[in-house]
Image 1 (cartoon, each protein chain N blue to C red):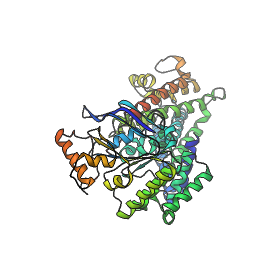
Image 2: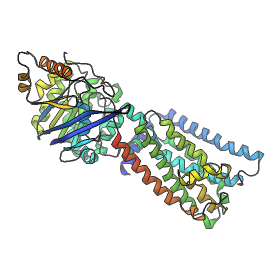
Image 3: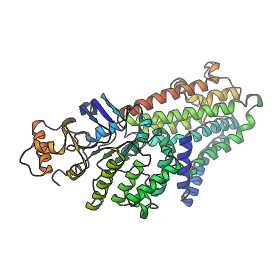
Image 4: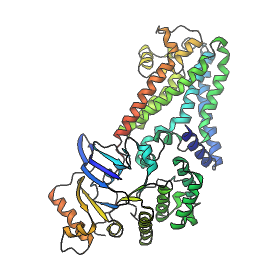
Length: 259
Length: 267
């Protein structure tokens, strides 16, 4: 943890030397994500509910999923660059340092530009908060933390996969960026099989969908057991354990480059 | 200080298991200066990578400074220094001085000790003129001196160098060699290096390990190596002779990735 902050700070200082590119990258990342949110607004000019959820409720799902993803991406999204580091040989360098290569990779090139996505998600979440009853507000920070852990685990799994498939980092993207898009809409707009998959196999449903059913006081449209609404910490823990094992197995199989 | 017991590592190449290193057993005592020779793809780098914790062995085991490299990688990192001739361990975009500061933070070297050590190394390796230059703008010789400094800031007991003189001009080569010799003599640092440059071996190494086809083909002094092929004038000829005879004896297994280094056997 201390190592992470130290490295991140050093990188942030180095990247602050390029002020223009810094401002441009924050703005562009904010704008791209803002357009994404506007798209939902446009959908609601044609319908009053989406999968049975009102605009504010959809914004709540979008905001919680978005904040979780943005925080995970900001702190650990860089581990997805593993295959680049392997090919460039910089991963070897990380392995000879007395700090976990995972932390070194996560902090590598850290800069404040990673805040753009987070700012947009926080705004959407803030606007949606009136739908949250006071008595159930405690769940909001819990679900965001669990969401961060789940997305971080997904990033880690994607990276671990690259130890085997050095040439296929895009495959991991399907789960990370595909995952965040999935969580930004009510799962009730998707099919039954997909929802079971993201509940029991890749537990993305626990990022926001299941806990949000509790917060919003909704019955589960798919009729899954009620205790699942409180299972986000369990899902986060299990997925992290799987991710940690996969990462270790990946390091053991690591082949380095030619010389 | 370094010990390997039947150390081996396989690579899977298109479904076929190829042993890159096989049944390697040797020991290096504290304070020794050992050179590791071998043709391209013989398994030198794979061995070095197993000793530094980068690669996990498939068979056997290794102990460096009393630690298992793959399992105790972080603890080992504080005790050894590693230099790769083919690539830098420094941060491409940061000035050399900032790279060193980052190394200090990573290794948690005390600020005073760091200051003293850096001052010493700056003087001996003449880093002064380019301490503020970003690493990507350094010449190869400057970069190598920077890399060696970075590997020594935490005062390691063992220094492992993978082709440290590759691509350096005559002057830079001589500087690096005399520095390594002094480091070994004055501080008693154990040094293990791989090289294709037989000048390195003749000037520096009291002991030579010859690795071929992933196996230890020779372990002894330079004089003994020379005696192996009587009638050959230079050490280059001796080694070229040995490489050739081993190639004839057994066909070379195709390597996963060809080494990028130039064949310097006859250089």
